[in-house]
Image (cartoon, rainbow, N blue to C red; front, side, top):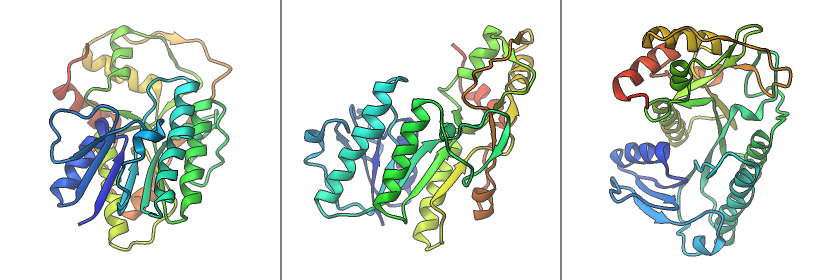
Length: 284
């Protein structure tokens, strides 16, 4: 049994925690406002950005999952979390002379490619926006702590409760048609699956890389995905959007490293994933 801390135990973190508890592990979940139902997780009420609230945090963990997400999508919130918050948590462990293994979640926004290129874990990372820049900084800090730590770069997460693309289809938002603007996705159940898979591989003693790119098997043009969704909802096809000359990202994510390790996606393409979502959520 491992003693595990999930720092940023929100939607995905809680789902991961429940799975790990069922496997017999001790799981603590750090979040600002713990839920009433703890689901077997020992929740700790604390804000990563406030060092005083971390002062009493136990540090004798075997594994830390860093899954925290910013409060808002702006520079201040990203800096507060990926710079200040992460440093606070790393300091709490180093100050107490404990060095657990870390699996830290980042995103594919660390890539700055704009011409639809294929990218993998070894591709150049030169993000043009603050979100990718600060997430890349967080990756570097976690790996500086220990070369054995892992970084998982998630593509765009979708699934029940995450309806951005579904709303785009229903509202008829204009979509870029030519040149193709690629979207890379991962269903949130696969986010949990990938994290559990990598954790168990580490426990088994499997030699792992420092980075894993977690995106489904089929990067697809946004036009194709939204058009497919409009057919499912029997909506009109989207209008063609004028090409944006100042795009900060447009790439296709390759998951070869993860699949060669043995992971198989529950939802390998958007079609399986969104079909599942139709049955478990209602667009509002």
